[in-house]
Length: 497
Ligand code: TNX
Image (tube, rainbow, N blue to C red; front, side, top):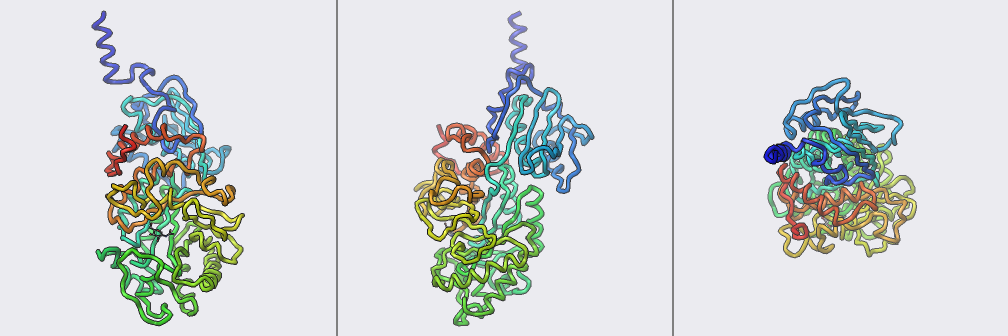
């Protein structure tokens, strides 16, 4: 008898599906970003029983992504069907944003949302549930009801200081999508290089795309490359925000076109990392022709709502000149049916139309010119900048905004961090990765992971759900999943115990 029990227990340990007790509850899975509401139920459904799947008719189908997950990660077959054991369903009665619900029942799993985007966010949660339940071979029964805390949840990649190939950027998009980000801001131009083909100004890429920080070879995206990326990201419900930074950060443009300089002389290529020394010539009409042409071409390639015109660190442009410039340039974006976005210095403008500004100062700064009633995306440099070192031992990164440990990056609130800003103006957050000190995937991985994961939870999850001790436990498991995917994250001593 005793040995029969032993054999039973052994079999249970091996197969883990003899009864539901071995299956941990839904709310104890290490989900990131953590959902708003999880209701546990007793019981489980075996992963092996998920053999059929149904989808609604969708404009932007992500069926292929799910089928690939079944094939490559679960390594089991699944059939498309009209009434799948797993079904994705559009339900107009649900909240019409990115909200979704998941119901895991005894013999069915249902993901529902009002929009395709909501279904996709729900799929990301379900994917994590499958990954973190796979050793139990069964999913715990229960329900998730979830929606984002902020409408704008972005990451920025600086492809100007060092160039990143289309494949490298797509990989970043893949990783962002796992964590429900919805905007990728590309910093496409800076002193060191111009990275996007502009057909009406061909010398930009002919003369100024091959340089980068440190003198290594750069590169650029053709307009076809850019469109390919926009479409790739759209499949994952990520909108590209293109930035061309003016009037400062323009040495690459000034190098390519001498006529954009006040003295008519093109400067040398810049491969250092100093900032604030370059400016377009504000008093020349050709400057506005140039800026409008770039806006027009970028707008025609960009289905998303925003064109980012930079506007930061304009020490080389005297204040009155800066005002003249941005007052002229910001309305040009609206002319091409896009909303202007800029670093928060652009709020100095007299323009009163739609304008989204991005706050990058340290939390202690009190920007006088930031007007109430205008939307803001929070990227406070001392919490959100992925290019700051973790600590004094970091292999990559800068230090001017201070060290940002994995814990510090996680523990801040976009709405509360800067008391002088009105919480209702804050529509989201963005986590910028400047690339002065990195040039490839391993550099991206080191600086972005794990901090980008914590930022995803800041953007998505309710503040009342965020807590370092719980996050830390979940993060460790997320990192082992990412390691299997080849992500070489920074190994923080804070995650050792
Ligand atoms: C500040 S803050 C910048 C970038 C640099 C970055 C390096 C802001 C909008 N601009 O030009 O790359 O610091 O950390």
